[in-house]
Image 1: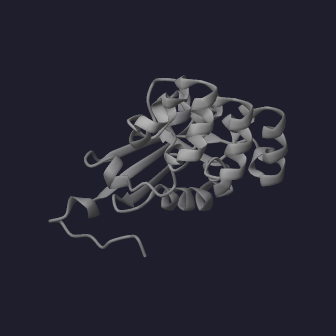
Image 2: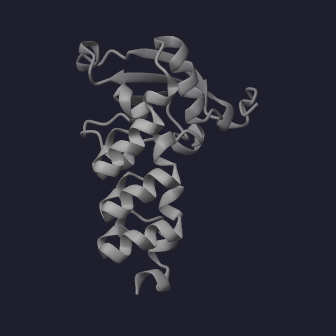
Length: 188
């Protein structure tokens, strides 16, 4: 069990109230959250999605969460399932997250694979679970170096995938993991 028990000497175990906002819901415009839940900072984002699935009966695979800001949704702002809340939000009593619902067809691996073969931009709608998939990303990167923008953090550190993108256009390095951005063999 990834969750820790409360210990006031360890802030990592302190509870936090999470507000899930859905831009598509009228209540969100007024600032009312779709869901409120209490979580520990030791939870991972996947734990929040599990609770959200129970609360709104929405399959976890279709949930995409980002930090709630006044800016429009940014693809690289999405929270990955294994990230720990305490690392993302070390302090503060309320954590506000935006929910983006992946369109249902894009929650099917086979559908998404066919879609990215036609147009790499289909990745924009894909859940993070599929943007962590090497086959889907390598298929997309073969079409365009810009597909690296939609890759999970793990795949942005995959040297072979990043090299394929950089060979098309050096600008792909902006979406590569930090460790690869300074790799002299890759940058040549």
